[in-house]
Image (cartoon, rainbow, N blue to C red):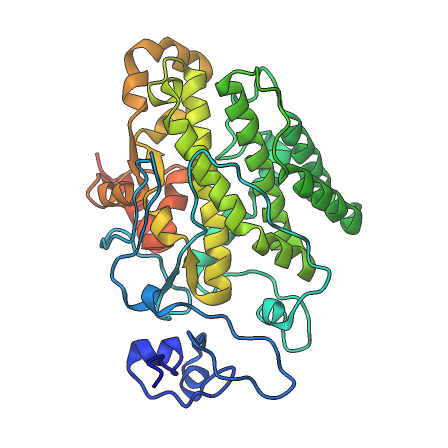
Length: 402
């Protein structure tokens, strides 16, 4: 006798009787919920694609642990009132494990651009008439987050910096990936009416394919230089995937999704590597602090990008348990300081600036902090978990504090 349950995830979690209708049961159709089967029923004759599934352990287990060697990143699913990703469809949240990783092992690309796209991979991208649906939020808070994320390519083109690429990061030397990303973003965002979109995405495809290959930098380069080049590659990929997900056609969006696990794994490896660099653990110069902070912000925004996309498509925040533990700078205000002032204060304050805390701890600290005006990065960290109204109320109260 089989002990596998047959009901869909939503009915199982809500303890409702499921009619096992494929691909969407009557309960999920009536409540407008995403219908997923841990063990999908046999599809009708002629139908070969299976509905997306989520394992039972992720649904019913209060804690999920992924272990990794020689790293202080605990990938635990911790419960905290400060950290609750807002569900734009008010559905039951389901967490999905990211690809496991081992520090020190090379990240070998396992992605092959699809020649054909299956129905199950595209059914949530298209409308009833087959038109590609734009990624957009169903609430004011989520729309704000999406507008913020898709603004970064245009911001790089106009200002030469973003909230994850500091203006001083590549002041002395600009790696090729950033040069190419700047050119692509400028062409794509500043001249949308005259830019050949098809050619622009062909360039993006070629760049992404090249950046996913192992780097060929000489081994004699310093560790900090290699880390900076690795960061430039990941930042360029973040910009390209943003363009693909928010502005690309069906094939572009599917390709970007398929590369998500590999990019999030690469981001975690870069965080672990940066934590092992003494120069970044206790930065003695402004430039070292900027490099470490750019690494932290790039990794977090990569998780944000794929998390927002997965919430839009599935009501699932991919990698939420990992996102909670990603490190952040305890003193984010140092990001906006001008270089001359920062150099003058290097000796007295860099040790304080080096303090980091997990994303979850940042949110818990924010809940008990004094109201004030938030910078863009702080606001982006708060809105997905607490809502835009809470962030605006916090800033409004800050204007009343004498």
